[in-house]
Image (tube, rainbow, N blue to C red; front, side, top):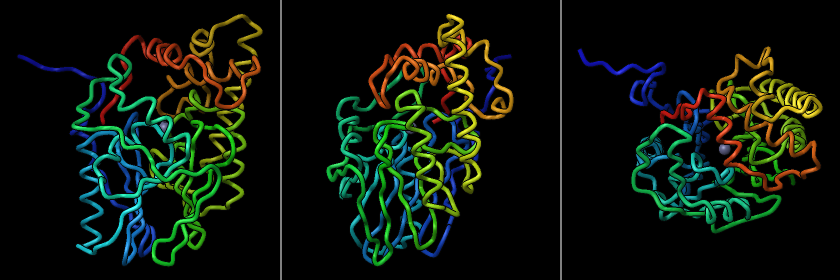
Length: 317
Ligand SMILES: [Zn+2]
């Protein structure tokens, strides 16, 4: 008998993505299971335009997202805008499949995509069929704030002035409905991931999110939620800082610290291996790094694989 054993489902075994209508014109597009490279997107529909919030990691997933928009849009014409919440490939790889869209993002999101291109991170994550993709960075960029209108509905783009998940996080805030698309500032049910951003800056960004007073949060990964998920993220970040400072005093490496840490309530979050990467950032900040300063990301990703028993990280994209 031939059989393939694996301890998690394959991509085709995941529930299909679903379009989640939040208001008459605002939609979240939720992709289970929200794991590595499986992001959420969204769209705001007008009579004369449509605003997309992020694309997906692969050609197949992005085409499915665009088909979901077309299904709701029912042939209405109009210009397309695409906002990227940050430069990571799970949110931007599919940009090239919207060739007629005005692509908008933070200036450093553009720079990030131009410098990394389409990553094919073999060895770090399980192999993925990425499809036919080419880099398509934002070509309308901003630093702090930008207002977009879909018909007369205001969508505010905010960068909170600090690195957090990355150096270029942008949220899309719809004040009329108190709906916030957070990108990866929030993972609902997943471990926060600040390796390429900042622990200290994440506190600032999460405070700024709370300041907006959202009722509905569409996180970068995981189910639509309310602002209470922010509390768990804050607690995790404090745990991270404490673990880092104690481990440094004890002379441990980030990987040793991750392996010996007691995750406690955070063991319930998915992707515990992020602790090894997050600790690289937390150690650097203990040593005086400012938010977003370059650190050795590849070494940190390697430690995440080591934490994962030396196996590439689960990726069902
Ligand atoms: Zn990300």
